Each structure stands twice: as C-alpha cells, then as structure tokens.
Length: 115
Image (cartoon, rainbow, N blue to C red; front, side, top):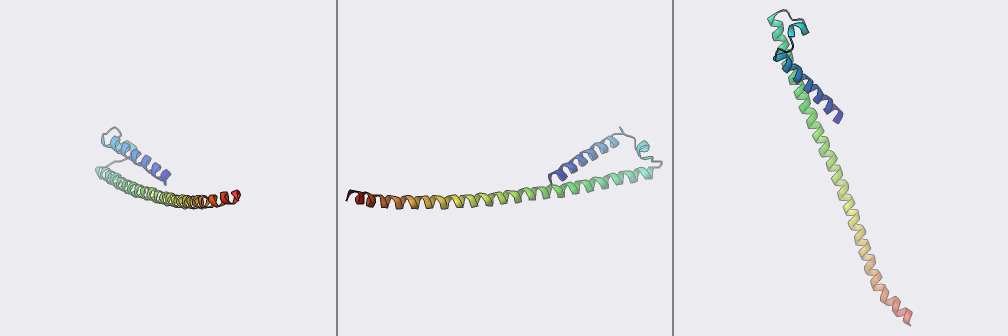
C-alpha cells in the first residue's frame, strides 16, 4: 500500500510540474502535441483538467486506504498489548498467590524441624 501511495505521489508531482510548465508557456503545446487549431488546444486543456481530477481522486482514495490500514494495524497492536498485559497480570497474581502459600507453610516446616 505504501509503494502504491508513493508511486501515485510521484505521478501527481510530475503532473503538477508538467501543467505548470505548460501554463507558464515554458513548454509549447503546439510542438509537443502537434496541435494545429484553437479547438485542439481547448481539448488539450480539458484533457489535462480531467487527468488532474482523476489523479487527485485516486490520490485521495489511496491516502484514505493507507490511513485505514495504519489504523487497523494500530488496533491489532493494541489488542496484542492488552493480551500481553492480561498474561502479565495473571502471572503476577499466580506468583503472589504462591508466595503467600509459601509464607504460610514456612512456620509449619520450622515447627516440624524443631520437634
């Protein structure tokens, strides 16, 4: 997912740079696209706007999917942390319970040793 997001971001940056250069007349659309009439220039700009809209929509969708994936991974990690905390709590309780039992048994053992 991250690779797709990165590729799409590179495409968007390339599109923006190309469009800025084209609109700033650094690039001439007549020589690049072999345009002869004003109607073809208008069609070119309409196509550029359409491609830009599709790229931005795709970028939005991929970004949302990426964020949703990150949130899901965070949720799974939080569940694992909670599970480990529960295991640790159970082990501590068992240890405390065993320590308490050993303390109760120690006086009896000492009494038996003295007798």
